[in-house]
Image (cartoon, rainbow, N blue to C red; front, side, top):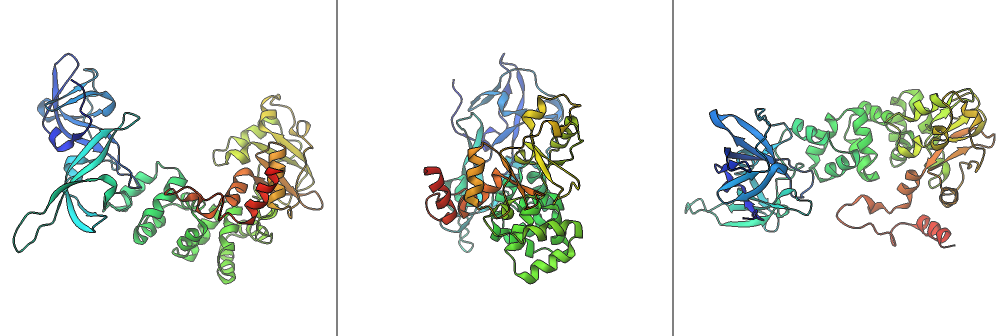
Length: 434
């Protein structure tokens, strides 16, 4: 018999679990899932199976080969006998998801979850696709409400961002997500929950997440923080992103937060804010990987191994005369990581750096930056002043952030790459088209 294509989980409770040889292992007691930050159907991680003496274990769904009306068959009789303990990020479907209060999105009618149906998707994962819900009946007549089925995304109240779970549980779920995905989750949250989560994140994590939000949301969230905390988060941000964010705020707010920042953190941000938007100076970071001429290849490779560096910034190091901090001494050239990997570790970086294709001035336009990166197949380009001192570097991800239209972070629809991107994208398109 083939596995059912849709299984209502409440009907699984108490049915027998067998190994491939027909030997009974135990009975199904529950199913484990994790709520998602969006409204997409959550994946069923596995089943809670009760063995003899009420010993409960976890069986991953990947071990299940067949689900029949009266039995579940596993791929093998070998199972992990460790006693099941629910993690803080997990939800037990039968024990915790059923009977939850939800709202039908189309009618705004309150209801409660009676059952949940799971189905296999294209990747053969089992996901909860439908819910059986019961609306609230009339109190005076004591009539029971209507029972019907809805798609998972047709109700409000079950997404991670809408759940009644404590902030600690939400943070535990968000901790395993990339900053861009956390930013998307924050946008789906209520204002109250968004502030709770943002306040609970540490400065570095919140800085990473802020950099992935649209500028208006960045400003709004930063304004919700105490000034001292906002200044700490700005210090943890990349200096170019901090400058962009402050540039969206009134001058009085800019100056107040800059004064609260540590001087060594505020200085490069102030300098970046003096450059015009859509220029190399306005796009660049003042913290690329910079080495002095007497540094070795081994030292350079150790620097680019820093996991906090973006791939575009870590792809090359810039060789300068002292001082090493931007604005540096005279810029000598660029050593790309591919070249460094082919050289002896004891070799000096000054001997393997490239003098071409040169650098850009801070007033170079976005079109010039784009043309330079495309013409020489680069992921970053150095920016120098009139005295050939290194000021920073513009990476390809900085360029993309400014080329894409404002709605590019919106997951609900395709970005409008034809309209709404502004004259900057029109100019770049003209360069590409020749």
